[in-house]
Length: 345
Image (cartoon, rainbow, N blue to C red; front, side, top):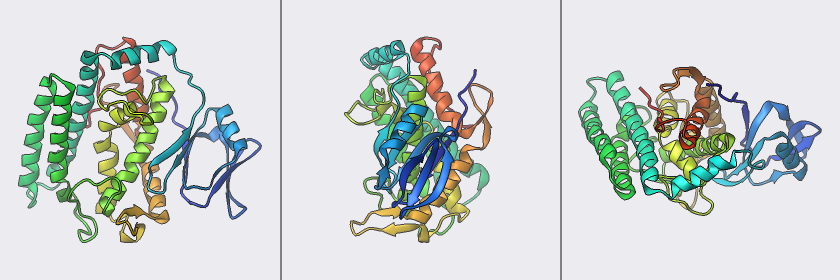
């Protein structure tokens, strides 16, 4: 199977940066001074975390060269995205819309998304048990893995989308209830009691939320690339302005791509309390330096090679979302009997 080559994503973290164009180059200005320049042909997408914006001339260049341009808030929440006109096969999207209206098809796909997610959450816990056998938390983490094994069996037997979502919620709670035990360093700063999102209320949630936003952006781009509509999902209900299918796809990838990276950065002290800021509202966000560290780690992680569990080919981790989007498109098109989730072993 031929996969699309993964090109660079340019992340702009300085909130005062303004993007412009100089012939075939993207330029970044700060205080009217050019700080960075890169040829457009080196890029697949641009993600900016600020409010200053980009010139219409650059937007035209991005559209002309097929480069997506996403605007995120400093906390990593997608505010707007400019993409080129849809190139996907209209018949593929038509089939996707029909499947989304079919409860049986919706349940089958949603079941695989949830199964992949809970399987990979359990794998994160099992990795802890393997690396820290005999630790004080081993017993409670082992109990959680057994509960998740039971929940995985229930996923396969779920007879409705509401039942499936309930099981997914139970499995997520089981996982997050022991997540704090996986944090081994700087426990006075990095602790986890519950998932808080809008806004994140502690450094761990701030780190998770920021990385989840980056992953969601990658999943949306991957789905667009293979010709699917990222807004029409199966597990997540359709809402105006929400990329429901991208949220579906990222569920199985969260534990492997985001949770493990977050734990690694904390436990190896790559990130510290100096990389966060507390807002008057009580929100905890990564500051500019913190975002730079996380994006650098995220990009480095995406360059690592793994053997894809279904394709049995060596691919960059950054290509996993594209591989899964391609497999999903092939299933919807009818080339595969079922959608194979990404299973981390």
